[in-house]
Image (cartoon, rainbow, N blue to C red; front, side, top):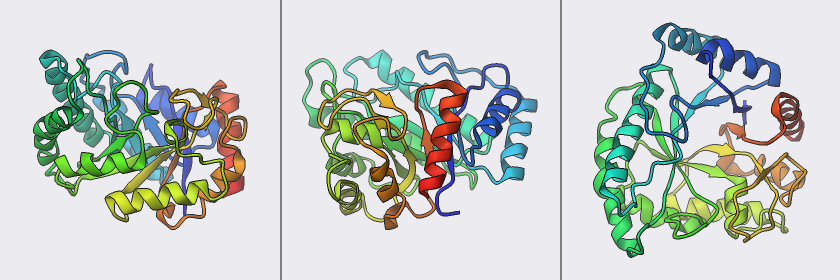
Length: 282
């Protein structure tokens, strides 16, 4: 399948019991889950029985799975405790990713806090994140997928070319990939709704990190205009990006075989509608 379409699913109450049931209801061909509280530092062990059922369920249905790491992670922080917790939190997400058979773990690229220079924050990213990438030695270890932000504050990576310095400090590690969030890149200033906007953005990404590094797309429309630097997701076709841009995305050479995950509003009904719409555009 050129582009499996799915969504982020709730898992409170059981990865397989709740997550896979929700995925079926929305018609998902790919899923993304949290394996820890996204707004906390806790690193729960997980439930081996649910892990196995989830892994088997995904394999049986041919559904690729992904993990989204907690939002608090920031390797560019000036706070030593935050950096240490970021290491432990991401190590946990990567380990849990392997346990549930996930292909990738998505992590936000963070920001330079405390007024420190961007170059200094990026060097620190390399110092702490590279050893974690080097720990990914199992055949079934997930990839680490960098997700850029909407460009709020002192963001380290929001425009496509920002992935360049990020990949540089991480030595273009073979376990490194990109998760492109359409809402984020649009809000950061790449006008996806403009003529040829999607092609130009994806071409720039390939130019920056090389072909084959785009491993996942977070398909979200944007409640804000291009360049607003605000991360506010809208349902597909109901925001400033529009359905034509998603149709264009689905024909670009770089997105061949890349799953689309929605993180849109509207609950089960809205999610099922967005998945159906993306499938129709495909």
